Amino acid sequence: MANEIPITIHGNLTKDLELQTFPDGTPYVNFTVANTPRRYDRQSQQWKDGEATFFNVKASGQLAANMARSLAKGARVIIEGTIAQRAFQGQDGQQHRTMEVTATDIGASLMFAAVNVNRNNQHN
Image (cartoon, helix red, strand yellow):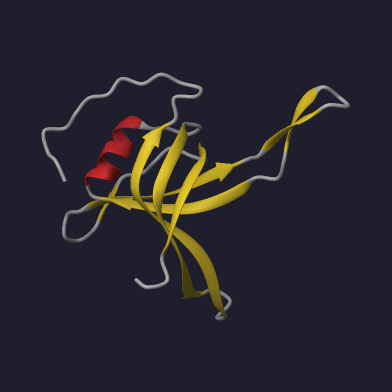
């Protein structure tokens, strides 16, 4: 779509992933990632958390299947994808808009964890 903007997000999964399947059999996951900025306060000599920003993200295909097998709530991830505005009608009957990220690649951050990589035989 013409209104998609490339984006990279670093954050933590807010809950365990639930793998679902489209009617054609394609796997997908919808999930939320929280990014909380931190800054060092020299006066108190402590790290302080800022206000968290939450991103709604969707992934499909082999990416979604691999995520569901590999990641759990709290995992720090790096997401490459596109962000676009989507309109929808709410339960209140009003039109609303939301920003939605479509992931094209997702990796576990190695800043705070170690991972074992198991390659799939299938390549996209």
